[in-house]
Image 1 (tube, rainbow, N blue to C red):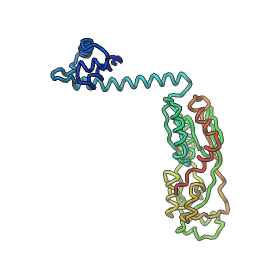
Image 2: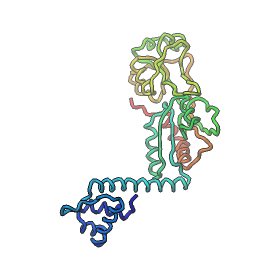
Image 3: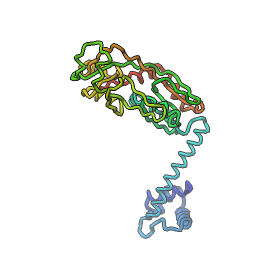
Image 4: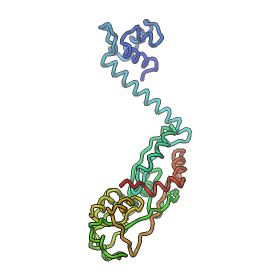
Length: 304
């Protein structure tokens, strides 16, 4: 690891290309800079400066030393800031898992506001589906989960708060045979038709699906957007978040079908572990307590 003076010497010679101009840049006598250059070469037992031309240049070895030392200096500076950050009550990193039912776009302003805090917290945002969201918190793959569905399971030190409720609509393509079936629709007429589902990512808590009848075939897709697309194309039927498909319903690209047994709104939750409580987590929880953000997360973005 080079000292600040040694790194400055390498950078000055690389930038100015001569001993005298490098000395002028550093505010030192040329003899002092020349002596420091030779000491640096002796320390590494390598030729770091090419003195054969009128211009004094770094050799490939000198260039490597300058580049790697600058990178290491940045790493040390970043590590120093992170150590001070943790000592001040901030986490080194915060892992957030959202249920896939929420749209990442709605979190972008929150992430931007978090960046404005100028903290060095390493932020990671991923998503799971249904019980997979709670499972990520249980298994230590999340510090905070947002939009988890189903009742909070038994997890040691679990803390949770309600985010709100999501409204649903049973929708089919206008080309689908169910589009012309008289309402209200009973459950039995659905059996011959494939249901589109977003696959639960749970590995140990048990997978879960909504709105599926025994014996009904399914098409499992990776996201709610994919489910909306599949149902718009007539590849299956099922429940969709009402707010996210308003435009498709208005334009007739999806048809709402009134059901004899309507689906109750889903209650969504925010969850975290009580044994992990730093300033970054507290900041995120404070944002999620704001009704405006909660409403935006639940309604999503109707970009159709």
